[in-house]
Image 1 (cartoon, rainbow, N blue to C red):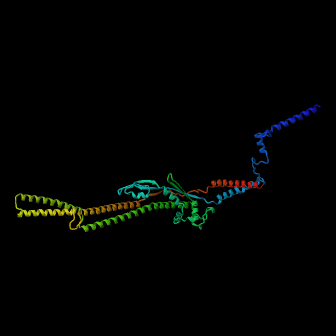
Image 2 (cartoon, one colour; image 1 turned 90 degrees about the vertical axis):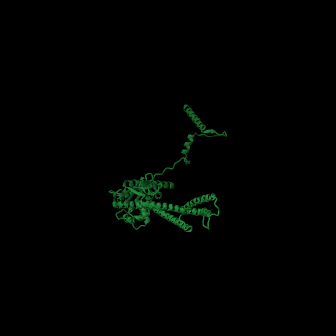
Image 3 (tube, helix red, strand yellow; image 1 turned 135 degrees about the vertical axis):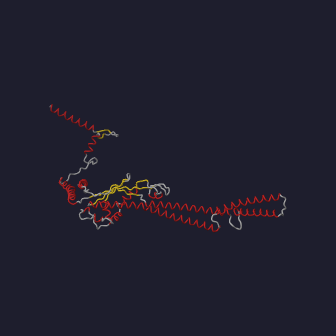
Length: 445
């Protein structure tokens, strides 16, 4: 009996616990209905534990079907085997590489003004032509544009064509002792030779300092030195051509200006010769104007003297018909007519001849044109002398402050660096391939 009571009590307690649990899971909604109630943590646990909801589930990467054996084999094939082959190549096949380097700077010298004439110093060779060449001093500036030109020229096809005139580049880079990956086929085209050449040369230019460096790679020390020395010569020739082109153009322009100035002066002189032949005077200013001025003064003095004598005779109560009176009167009349004639030649017109004032004006105009043409010719001749002197001088200098030297030891190939880079690259390729293969297998499963 006590046992039955205990059992009944336990059953009642179990029923009460179930009712309390069901009450805790229910809540009253807006329609006064009981609905299941769960806290946020319970709902999150149910969502994560649900097999039908894939929102919070991550697809695991399935393990390889054949274990780690296949993975290790793929790593050995993709990474270790190429590294071993690369090591064997560097150990037994790779040809030693020798490097010859030279460094240079292109400087521009602008000449100062001298005795041949004034002129402001410019920053370019064209401005230097306009300045005089009497002094030896000048401003030195960095030829930045010329440095860029030289650096670009050294990697162009033109440098190969000019280099081939003294150095057989095809033969140098196609020698039989060179390993196959680095050897050039001598029967290939010039474009392929240019691509191979750009792998054999490194150029660098620093615009801040104006310094440039060039490095040549060859497979013999003497080949590297020969190519580097020839490149220095070709670079200096190129810089001189750049400067001489501007100087020669300046000389041609100055010569054309001299020809034009001479033609203008000849034209002015011909016009003045025609004027002198037509007017019958060499120079009207000293020969005619000055002479007539002096003659007018003399005649005026004579007229005044004769008039004074005539007045004196008339005061002596002589008859107008007296011989002395008539003679003196005739002299006065003749002097007046001569004075009027000279004055008309200066300011009037007589017998259809030109007015002397107009003649002098035309002569002065022609003489001014002649003097201007002479001044222009003199300036043009001075400019031509300066241009020729500037063309004879050198304004651009390529200064190789580090000249090529014969390499004593091989500078390449850099085995350790290439092995490290190859190991990293092959490992990345192997890892990406492995992930891709596992993803494909997972998608098919």
